Amino acid sequence: MAHADTTHAPPAHPPAHEEETTTGINHRKLLMWVFLGSDCLFFGSLIATYMVYRGQSIVGPYPRDIIDVPITTVSTFVLLMSSFAMVMGVAAARNGNQKRLIQWLVLTIILGGTFIGFQVYEFNLFRVEGLRYETNLFSSTFFTLTGFHGAHVTLGLVWLIALAIMAARNPAGRPSDLDVDIAGLYWHFVDIVWIVIFTLLYLIGGFDGPPEAGHAAVQGWNWVTGLIS
Amino acid sequence: MSTNPGQEAVLAQQEHAAHEEHAAHEDAGISRFFFGHVPEGVHGGMKQYGLLAIFLGVITLVEFLIIVPEGLQGSGVVIAPLVILSVIKFFCVVAFFMHLKFENQLLWQIFVAGLALGLVVALSLVLLFGVFRPTPRAFSEPRVEPFVHHAPAEHEPVARMLPEELPPPADPADLAPPAPAGGAVAGASPGQTLFIGTAACASCHAIQGVAQGVLGPPLDGIASAAGNRISGYSAEDYIRESIVEPDAYTAGTADGLSQDYQQGLMSATMAGIQLTDEDVDALVEYLLQLR
Image (cartoon, rainbow over all chains, first blue to last red; front, side, top):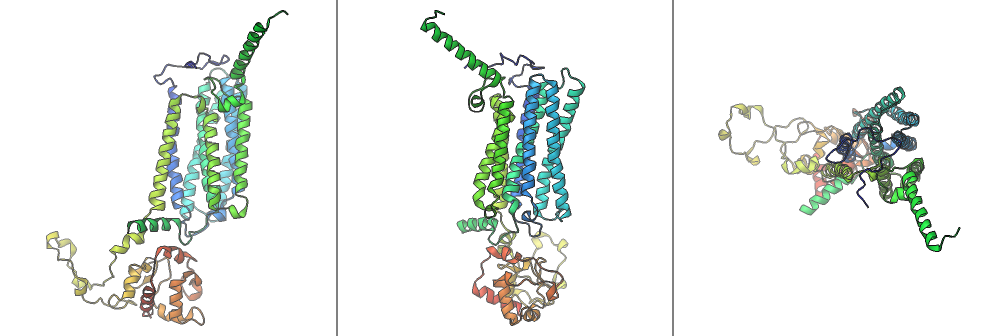
C-alpha cells in the first residue's frame, strides 16, 4: 500500500489551508488532540477522587436515595445522539454543504442543550432533597466531577453556537471543515467522558449506601498489615 | 459480441476493480469502514455513522437493562460487563466519531499516552487513598500514651528551653498520679489505657479530662445512666452489649442526650479492631467507674 499522502483530496471541497508541517498534521488539530490527552488526566483525577471516597459518606442522602438511573440513561442517550449529529455536521462541512452543516449543528446544539437541561434538573432536585455541595463526601465529589463535565458541555455549546452563527452569516469559506472538525473532536471527547461517568457514578455507584462493617478500605488495610506483621 | 473468454475475464476484473474503488471512495463499504483499511481522506457517510449511533444506543440500553433486576443493583457481578460495554462505547466514539482510525498514527499515540497517564494517576490515587489507606487509628495506635494530667505549675515555660536544656524524658512511673478531673479515674487503669489506645474509643467518645470524641455519645456518668437504657439490663449488661454488639441499641435524644447518634456507625468504624474478652472486661470495669 503506497504512502497515502492525500493525493486524492475530496474533490468537492479541498481543505482550506493545508500547510506543510513537520509532523504532517495540522497544528491546530494536533493541539486539540494534545489538549484532549491532557484533559484525560484532569478527569482521571476527578473520577479517582470520587472512587476513593465512594461509599464512605456517614450522613445521607446516599446515592441510592437520590440517583435516578432511568432519567440519566435517557440523558446519556441524548448526548450520544448529539455526537452522531456532530459527526454528520463534520461530514457535511467536509463535503462543502453549508446548509446541511447548519442543520446538523443546530441539532447538535439542541441535543447538547437538552443534556444540560437534564443536569440542571438533577442538580436542582438534589438540592431540594437536601444534598448540597458540602453535605457529605458523595455530594462534594459528585458535584465536582459532574459539574466540571457540565462546564465542558456548556463551553462546547458556546463553541457550536458560534460556529453555527458563523456558518449562517458567511456561507463562503468559514467555518472551514477544519474549524468544524476540531470543535467536533472536543464535543466527542465530552461524550466519552460522560460514558465513563455514567458507568461509574450511575450504573455501578448509583446504589451505594453508607459504609458497611468490613469496608473494602478497612479490609485492604488489614490485609496489607497482615502481610507485613 | 465476439469477445473471447480471456477478454471477458479481463473486463470482469476491471469492472470488479472499478467497483471496489467506487465502494472505497463513495461509501467505503460498511465492513471495510469498521474493520478494514480505509484510504486516507475517505470517511463514513450517513449510513455508517447512523449504524454506529444505533449500535451505541443499543449498548446504552443493554447497560441499563443489566441493572434493572433489583438483585443486581450495586452488586459486584455487573461491574465487569458494564465496564467492558463502556470501554467498547468509548473506543467506538474515539475511533469513528473522532475518526482517529483514519488519522496519522501520531495522534493515536498522543491521545493514548494522555489516556494511559490519566488511568495511572486514577489507579494510583485509588490505591493510595482508597485501598491501602492507613486509617488514623492504625497510625496513632503505637504513638498513644495514656493521658496524664499535669498541674500547670509543673511546667517550665517551653519557649525558654533550649534543646540541650531539655530534661531527659520522664519515666511515666515517676510522674505524680494525675489529679482526678471530672469523671476520670486517677491513674491509667488498663481499661483507660485501652479506651485511649488500642480500642480507639476516644476517637469518637468524650470523657471529661480523658477524651474529646464527638461522633458517639459522651460517656461521663455512663455507669449511672447505663442501667436505665434497656429494661432488664444492668449497667454492666448494657455497657458490655454496647461494646460487643454496638448496633443492638443506639442511644439518642430518648435517653436525654443532646442528639440522636448515627445508627451503625460504631460497628462500621470498629470493624477492623480486635478486642479480646479480657479487653472488653477491662473496658467495662473502667466505664463502670464513671458515675
